[in-house]
Length: 133
Length: 320
Image (cartoon, rainbow over all chains, first blue to last red; front, top):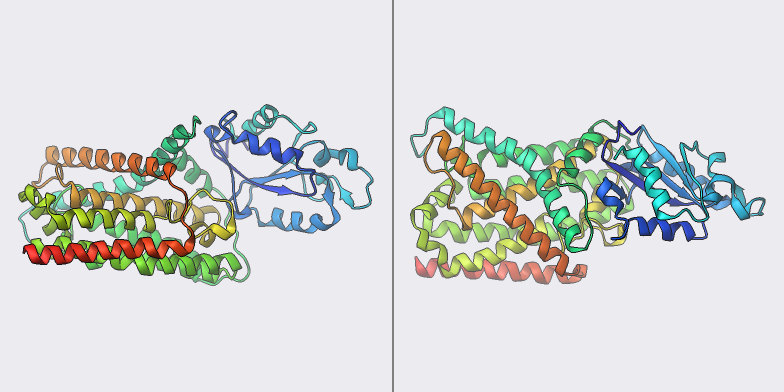
């Protein structure tokens, strides 16, 4: 994966039911302090432009189908990154009535980034493994 | 055929221009992005980032929706093809590229328009709401900026008594004082506005937006992926480079090779690259300092450009 995407990684962010804690951290990796763009990373407006998905939150019932459709719209070869504890194992929302399951229960996950929320440095380090920068 | 350049050097000029625009276009976009990032207090990606993106996209699968027809995959090819033709025949490095006699100002402007129309048709073909919206907006802006571009070059063609671009450039090289006339200055301002509108930069369109409702150009390419997307990104950056090189040619032509020979060509290439890079840095600095205009204010800006270009023509006719 790192070899295929050398120096260029575009991701489509999908909020599958997150509390927006992870979104704050993702927004801050593109701030002047962390500046993930210097490693060739960008968030895209369309899944067709992306190399993969950045999924946050437990997958709620209403978001399971949109997540599947977004995944199918990403051209191959694609990756799915589950960001935060909720995306990995539903976290504190585990067993809640509106939750369908973790991200891995809906789409195949290639990389998990632990933390509640993961700090920007952790996210950047994990994503640099994908872009090979 | 106006001058007695050897056929080999004319072909060499055209080849050099096409290769220069193919490689230089993405690098120009990368340079502008780096300048922007530095002014925003960030390190920013390397200048060659757009080339890395293109290489990666070229290796990816193409996904298309079930709704598309043969127009959808054809549009990126038309965009890149028409821009390559302009890059080959326009006098960007030297006054006599191959088929320079065909580089009429109308032909060049309509070749550039052909790419935009193809892209709009491709966007409509995808059948998505945002594609149609982006296409209608892009055509609205195109319909207002293309006439301004035509009239600007018409103003420049009056003193040269020819609508042929190499003839205009040759004429301005021979008469340097002519560059400081009122019609030149009016045309210069109008041309800058047209470049900004045609290449989808701020304040007309924001190339790095994620909000679909504010998109113009980005909304048209939302459905493209893989090699198609790579071609569109390449075509768009080439268009920007061609427009800027044309601007440099028409307003600051010094350095453009007016005689055949490798030394003249190297000087022409070096000065054109330097001029386009300087223009790119200037445009990037301008972009950081302005906010995007509301869509309904954009026609006012373009009407202003058109008014300036008409004044330039009148001034040129009075002086002549």
